[in-house]
Picture 1 (cartoon, rainbow, N blue to C red):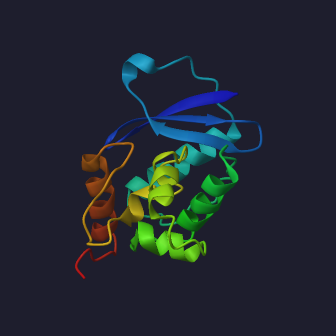
Picture 2: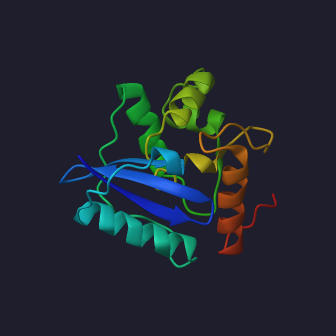
Picture 3: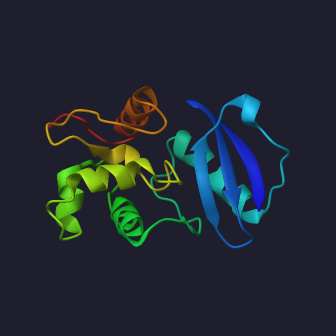
Length: 157
C-alpha cells in the first residue's frame, strides 16, 4: 500500500493507493501522519486535487477502488454521477438506485465513503436544502460547496 499527504485549504488529506488505484482519501490530523510511500497514482491524485482547489478542475479521472458492501458501492457510483456545481438529496440518491425507502441507508453509505472530494459525498444535502452530515465536518462541506459556487456553481435555488 502506498501513502502520501496533500495540504489543502481545508486541512491535511491522507491518500492511500495500490499500484493501480486510489483506495482512500480522508482528512488527516498531522499527528496521524506516517512515512510517505508515494506512487504515480498518488502523484496524479495530488495534481488533480491541486487543480480542483485552484479552481481549474471540475472532474477527476484517477482510477478508484473503494472497498465497501454492494449497496455502498451502488451509492458511491451514484455520487460520481453528481456533476460539479450540483447537489442531490439523500432521497434523490435513493430514487436513482431504485430503492426509494433507503434514504437512511444512503446516508449511512454516504458517510462511509472512503474517497472524499473525488467521490463527491459533499454534494449530498438534506431534502430541505440544508447541509447534513459530512465525515470531514460540516465546515469543510460548506467550504467545498462554496468553493464550487465560486468556480461556476450557484448555491441559490
